[in-house]
Amino acid sequence: MKGRVSAVGVLVMLALAGEAAAQDGQFGPADGTDLPATDIERVAVGSTAPDFTLAKFGGGTVTLSQFRGEKNVVLVFYRGYWCPYCIRQLSDHAVIARYGILNPDGSRRGIPQPATYVIDRAGIVRWRDVQTDYTVRPTNEAILSALEAIRSGS
Image 1 (cartoon, rainbow, N blue to C red):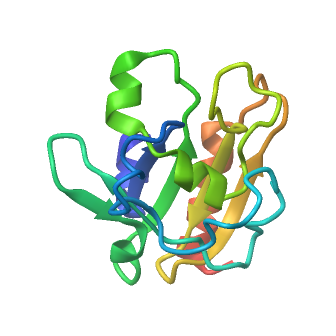
Image 2: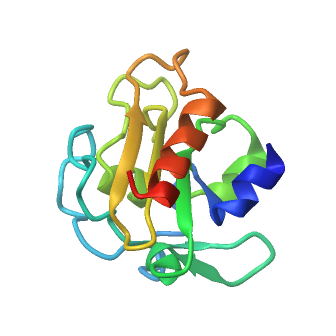
């Protein structure tokens, strides 16, 4: 399976709740910070994926739009807020809010709805799975099928 994933040029990006990185204004979404954080229908299939910049583990930054024209992207919003290592590596609450997937009923501050987006090289969302039940997740096969559909042009 690893070969199949790298063959379609996938970058897996993980984002998690937290606010430290966004507070200095350097990180987070490029627009839409005034939009409600709980609109799970906001980023639909066929729409341009909202752009954002996050800190990279080990230093530097990564911006979603830097992959346009280069790679397809799988964007996963990870719910491991209780893990201090995950918080430090993956924190950016503003991106969760920009995608509209903040869980309003979450017992932990800033936890997202489970969400996975497949974004093509042009930055267009081609597949998504957003759940309000945290126990429901897409299969790896479903994500790979979405990537294969982009690759084959269907």
